[in-house]
Length: 474
Image (cartoon, rainbow, N blue to C red; front, side):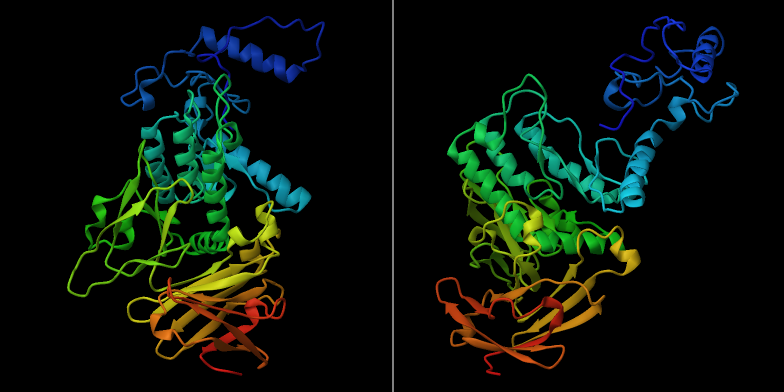
């Protein structure tokens, strides 16, 4: 909690220091004497009590320092430059800065730093959580807008307290909040002393299943999140966005607060109300598929300008996540793998998920670094590829946008949704950068219309792929 909290309202009651019993140094004594003199002079503890706008309708010094206090470097008390009121917000920036610089400079490691207090510039050094919320359904719904806001403030790595912070949560609220909160860029459970335990294991198997599977769904697409965060860092923009950001001409603007996009490809549709059995997902006029099963849930209609609603079951087993036609992304089916932390994912094979649009096209990107180098963008220690697929050509092509010759990510195969026209396809030929060809084989699943083709384990690295030709033997 990086803010100057004193738990007093302004200046705490002064307690006389016995200089004979403690060595506090002349500089500290000077600060104390100057502060006391200020109280008799220009120091007015109520100077900022009646401002035109006060956030939260609370006095600015509630549970914190006096806004009229001066910082140590101030030698001239007529100089207001370092008055607490004028520099308070910078506390968060510089605490994040010195913490970050310790890890990157002294230790030489990339840090993971989260902050509750922020100000413009903080995102250079730390992520953000939204602060102390309440364990209510309303606050859970509001958290989506909170995450939106900080995307606009150029702080994409953000999340809210899952299950709520103040007051007791309930089992159903906590389960639903896990199903939502797992898809925040930053996910964590946080509550105050004196409330009931709210870890998933504190409740029944239903909440355990909801939390476990939602996090596994997130882990399955973690490489996609990582890639999009790289692109936002490099180019600006938003990671989490309302529908109308991507579809400004659609009626999607009416559905801002109950579903959200991750990048341009994934639509998360959580259950946000008690006793909810179904959710109504608004799908803009594109092809949309269930990310987990591959079933198509909405189809593009050229005769309509707008999209429409589809009703989905609001189960506790999984969160409804839809993938947009026209997308290619890295995917790891964690439900089939055993992982104990996100670091483990880095060493497991990754498949390519292709979801063609109504025209049979799809594109996507992938960013990979070693997840440890301090500044991979500045040092160039990463690889970054662009993928494009055309169903009519039965071909996927990969263009290397940046290659440092060091990144390693094992390739397991390709899964393609919506391949009803490819029922007879069971093989493909992968061509590497060095010209070597690798056979791929698999099967078509009639119920879901999904084609899956695999390579032999440990034979292909992602950055070595240049083309994949489908329905073709090497």
